Length: 184
Image (cartoon, rainbow, N blue to C red; front, side, top):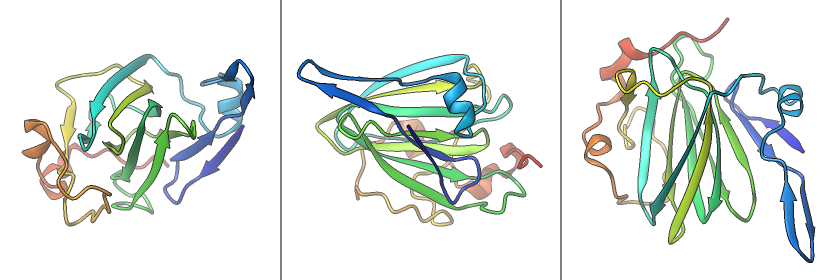
């Protein structure tokens, strides 16, 4: 099992060990002591599962108060997954990282509390699962526009399909009061 720190502090790419044979495959999708050793020490309290069609973009989302860390993975199809550091005082504030997560590569991404998260579906359909460090709070959720020029995210889809909430999301500059501080 591999844990790779990214250029954003706290964002970790996880490559599970996959055991394959003539029957199929087996892997651990979460093991608290191993993940703790790999730099993901949070306690998870909620699991979520979504299914989306090609070019659906979900995000960019965060929650404050009760900011959520998310351990995400794609179990069917493929997505381009993005984490954006918007923690006030972070050395990487405003920077983003993106990775293809798929049912074929089994990669996971840990997105810490205070970072925006979003993904766009690259395949015909995708099923996406994630573990959260805090319970969902509808009053605490906020969004930032997927194409905010301040963030300049390089999405692999020019015209994604968006929910009304994501289409009408504000720019990062308009939600500064919702951002949480970078942990010291």
